[in-house]
Length: 337
Image (cartoon, rainbow, N blue to C red; front, side, top):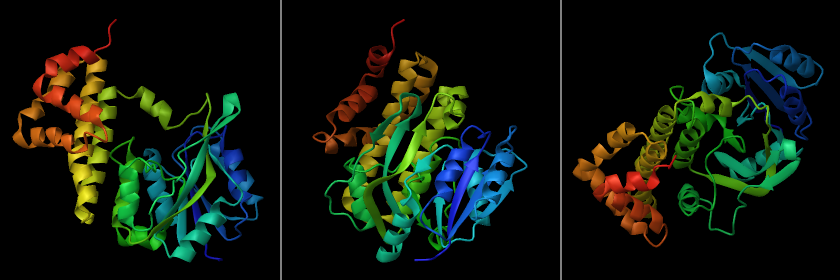
């Protein structure tokens, strides 16, 4: 177990966090690491801090400075192209990991000959000095990509962020996987679902080895999202999720998963957008969404949520209201001033 592992750290104005994050990576018990810091045109001292730490680390490293700000997806793609490892890990610039994070993922990937492996993770709320575990993997018949997608459909696992994964680089290249650069939210969801649906072998470690940090001064995607118009937010996430779902349908023959994607996931996204518009009191945006329900195919998708009425009855009844009494649904969901 001595393959080179590339740890890609995209960053933008990360001088408050980058030192602790890099120390967490440097202190990993896996020896053959390559650390790639991809700077997205920072205006602070991120690059000089990172260089000073890495030059004294004894680790292989690259510091790549982009000339055009392209946000996290572009930085990850840049790091992926420059990486030399057999496996790659995407590490956020303000997060941490247990000392055996990399070694555990590598060992599992090699023992199972897996295209990708993921582990559990914890949230750390820095201001409260409090940890909180995410979903732990249940006793579930996993192994094949279809079983992982079934576990996702049953809400037994989360497939929404890449930082607790390791990917075989050749698998990424062979399947032409890249992070979408036309959106700023939902890119992880799109990438992971495409990867899972195209893989031939997946594995996992039922231990929380990655630590996702929340802190009040965090300058990350949350800041960008807060500055975005909620309409753009909804549209971008819907675009990412729709592309992910289309990829699942294309690459799986499992009838349950196909039914779940078509009769649940697409409808759920329509409902979420309508609910968001109603809560914002934006009738124009709401009507622009509900007009699609005049189309027979869209109405069929919305009403097909009845297949999952015992699993998620609320989605079916919301779909029913939006299709047949959209004005009532709008008034019920609109926040009263």
